[in-house]
Image 1 (tube, rainbow, N blue to C red):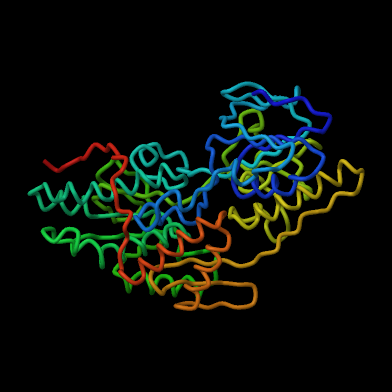
Image 2 (image 1 turned 120 degrees about the vertical axis):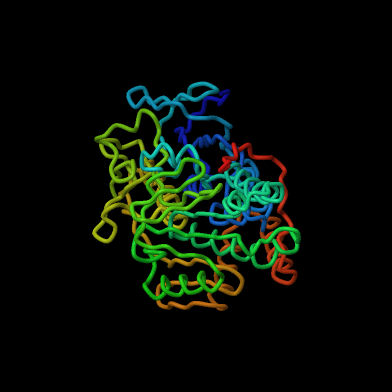
Length: 429
């Protein structure tokens, strides 16, 4: 990897997500050699991936070069690499570009889509956890309408314009709202020779309410907003299969569709060598103590979605969201310095700053620590918070200008098929 030898202890961080970036920043001016490994050379602001999928933003608006984030930091090294294995006995990380010894290892690999072992769904549905996946989904959505123009079969045309989103969490709710607005304001202008009124957006939730992690009033209001936009909300229904054409469920309900978006769950993106059963718990997450140390190790840590720190309030670990990851990265940075100085480590304490979700234009729900509100004000708060946490001044400006333009013109300029997604269209013929 061509990492120089140093008299400073070497900290290897696997993953350039919210947790990994926060930790690297915290260690930037300490007497440590920090090496960050990631399979991409950019950090992704995942909460806005759905806007890339629906043409509201271009991908470079929510991505930022990792090298630029940590530019000018002494003793910092980034390598574009895919981690293949961790040898916990030799303190060695093996990657596709070589091996690297470490004094301290931090696993911050985040999460990946959980298909719960259903191979047909994994093979035929669309995930939305990365920028490439979001671009694939954007292309598929647009390709479906182009294909619908070419078919004379009404049944096949309806299937191409029928969208099924599985999962009623923030990702599913926000995507459903965005698609509903496209159907209302953009499709009739883009496809005047196509009866886009027949397009259907279906949101399928296995539980009895949307946004189950938020308050009941937020769940009810989000459902009202979606139904007002024309989204079909299906609750207490579990999807059991999808063959590329037909969605089956555990009830007497099925959907014929060319597009299924799977947003029904995530699991930790585990690392080989640390994926032993005794180290992992709920959702393949690594068991860690209050100081982020992986169970049984003093020099191996895990933060963010991949870590499970059980507490009385969070027995299955903290929420798999950006805020816990960022806070854990900050706390671990302090603890690594404390460890080197021989000081007592500081137990992590999560400060929940609330949750929010947007359903569309002037529609959002927010559950903050002391206040709960919905509607236009919640929508403005949602926009401000997301702009604030975007990395890079340019990204904030570009996203803000795009949002203002989209709001005034009721348009989404980035509906481009830049990288066609090859899907085998199934027809009834």
